[in-house]
Length: 172
Image 1 (cartoon, rainbow, N blue to C red):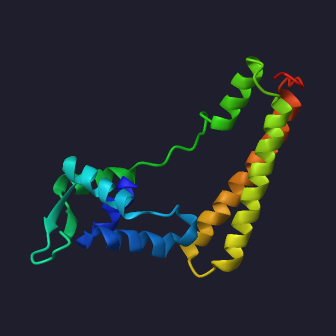
Image 2 (cartoon, rainbow, N blue to C red; image 1 turned 60 degrees about the horizontal axis):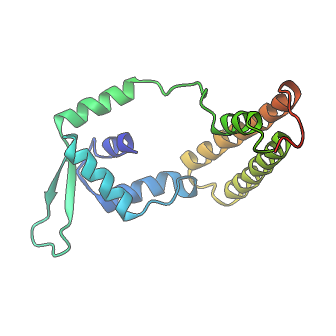
């Protein structure tokens, strides 16, 4: 989120609420709900780190502040823009959970896989419903469609895990 905030402050100063609105306008329901506390704590950390500076609005009894990038913030934004997002996911929480719980005999691996498959399928249904109702935001639609593709790949991966890992029923 930090880098998104820097990007939103790149062309103009904004209040925390304006940052929240800009994110919601672009991503709609695909973005987890942001509360004011999250927004302002992120802005406070950015200010503490010297990436933004906040100015109090004179005459505002609510202590409203407007934020803008510092030179260090512009440099951090430039670095973020130039750096590709990592493509590999070698720290998959579900897989690590499955392997450790199965090897310790704490859970039935087949039951864990079945539960995860149900979770992925429910997530697919939720995304399909979201796509059916929220077609007005191209960024949100593309983000949801990307998530659908990842979930489909995850479902195929579960099949591969079942085929290739030695899974004993009743390990728990």
